Length: 148
Image 1: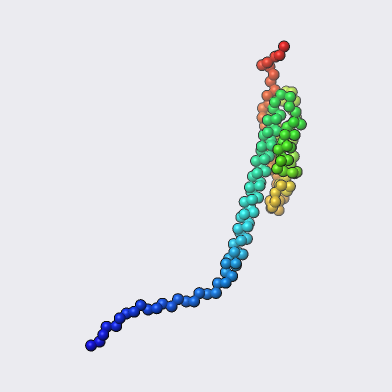
Image 2: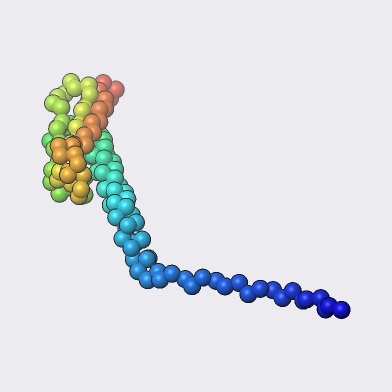
């Protein structure tokens, strides 16, 4: 009589791994360009947002400086320049509408040339500016209190 054959598990041969030396370096070289582009773009947008917020704040605080009785356009200009010079060295302009004793509104405009403050944006947008205007009603009424 014939003996039953015992099935042994077959040994599966695994193929020898291919030579992958340098593959990570090539993959990094392909992906790094896009990665650095995204990082620098994020930094540039963050800087432009900071400059935009700074122009808004400078215009607002300069207008607040000019709405009180006795304030002049020069006072507002000095306040806006004080704020702008803290972050932006040069490349900005401040304009204040004429103020008089009977002025009902103060208007301060601050504009920044992006060529002066941006790192890379000027290559793609050569003549871009960020501009912010603040308008406020003046507090020039002096009729409530009449000193003797």
